[in-house]
Image (cartoon, rainbow, N blue to C red; front, top):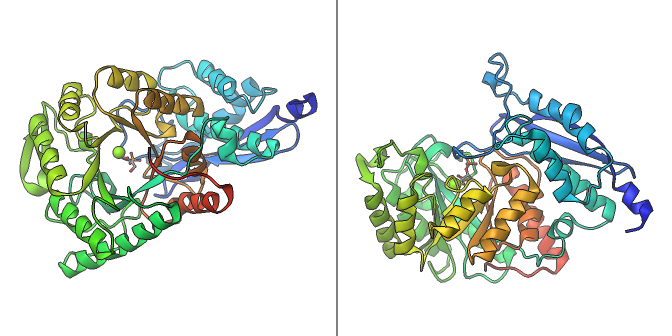
Length: 427
Ligand code: 2PG
Ligand code: MG
């Protein structure tokens, strides 16, 4: 890089402000301006079924605004505290930028400045650097790593905290594991989503609108019913369950764990132990084309996760979301203890791009899979599509195929497929 370009890439100004996410809850937007005049923005997502070990999303706590959930304080930190510390730094040196923010925050959970403020800066700076370099965001983020369009793992039925607690399990997803191109996989999902509605209606379940992530959230009698309907929907749409399109589930079990090793399936009127949960999941994998299970057990049930992995890890993808919270230290412990075989990667669980890529790198080095994931509270920012492609992770989870905060990501991937000549498929 010549010195003219290096100067043009210097961070000149950063501003943050409060915006709303797809649930109408406050989150943060950031704009970065570089010395050469480039300006770029990024918007930060926000979860509902959050893990206890996530980095802290700073909220104002002023009960008079948004029930205390305002983000004006986090947004103000961008210009008041972060900008002076980053001024003059090279926007293309993501590790240095993120490292300086981590040092400035100086807490283990980013609670001083707020992970929402820090992540907004991390992403806005990356996007500005890509524009200044005249290359697509995915290419800038990839930094020479092999990029790849990811297979979408798509929500069809929602439960748990994303659908008013109709059933306990949170996500019943279609995973097109045997379709050769991204656009064809997406088309399959659209048809499965429509078929699922028809089947549910035909069985008399009340269908009113969609859940938080755009999937159907009917009041089903049991968790198993969702699996039955989804398997039938795959067939009805014209695909072979298992061979072409399989099922992934996000149990999100920490959210119906009632302590002392008990999992309360209220909708079914029963309570299971950790061992019984493992039995149930194993039976489901035999009866339905389930090839991926996320958060099958409570986020701190390390021994249970080891049992689950010993029993199912050879044939099923076992993904830690609330379990790992995209935290390199927790992922290292999981790898050492054989407590899963895949990690869900959410930027805002850890708060910087550098640490996000570190987690993907750890997973890959251990022979684990990584699924790049959105949050249930999303924005119209398509950043995640470029991130997933750059990480070469092979899988992305964005919710369903309705609601434009979801489509922003799916459509960006369609654009990359059309333009970029990238390979596609899961690893
Ligand atoms: C999850 C996510 C996305 P949330 O649990 O995987 O579906 O939900 O953002 O609410 O944590
Ligand atoms: Mg999850």
